Image (cartoon, rainbow, N blue to C red; front, side, top):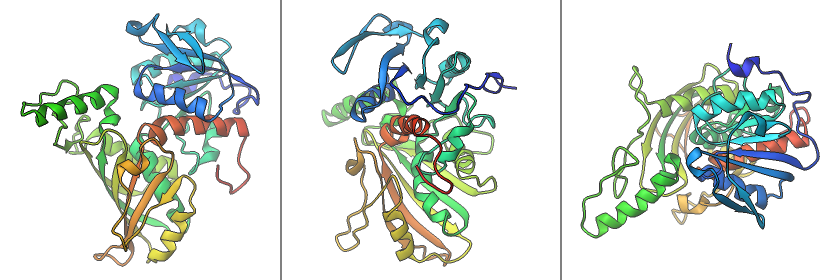
Length: 358
């Protein structure tokens, strides 16, 4: 039994409808910084902010909403009286501190992979499975960035016709590897343009004018960890434990915003016009599908923005039951920080009406 399963449930699976004491675990990272920006942008009800960081950042100052905060190292006493913990400091930190914060009565929304496949921990995309959030025992997992973007496009189509199989290829930006990888892409691109030899110290290979297969650990079956996350997490979020899904994940020289080429095989034919209409009105999705101008989603369309842009929806010429589509979404925003805050907002609002979508 995991720590998440043994942690006592809070008195309520919702959050109070009052200003909250909010701790951010990993406040100095790329996602932590985006969390701070979004808390302000969305007027999230924060009564007190507690920014937590690694020992090397302890004591440094952090400015937010006209106030100056001192970064602290996580400690059990700091979670007493905290309502909400937004965790984005990596799996090891989450495994150590999330159960402690939950035991203290906080709701932890964790951006790492530490608890995603724990059957006792909900894995939530608010536009897709909002009801799952209210089955938590103190910890809610935020899905992998590529999975979040994919399920936003799959869910409205799966609600209309059963999906048989999904094949997806991802084009993942440097932001997925953190702020240091983004800065390295900038600096090594300058090196190449100046005629130098790009030598990477953050990623295993230089991304400057280059791409490579995703650098997460390879598994015995030949897939990397990132590709298997997409399989298992999509199954869990969509409640399709037998879904056939195969992914190929690629790191590309884009600063932020991931892209995905998706082939979806249904149990029966799915008219393109119907799929386009469903995606045009799907929550969290923005349709960009201009065939006349040959203009479809690009990372620059979604960088710094909330929606996942979907387009190039077309009939698969090799299979009458399959559709092809292309999507782009900001990895740091909807792929991480925004989704976490939307989960918190969902817990404040309370369970959706039967059949409703957040």
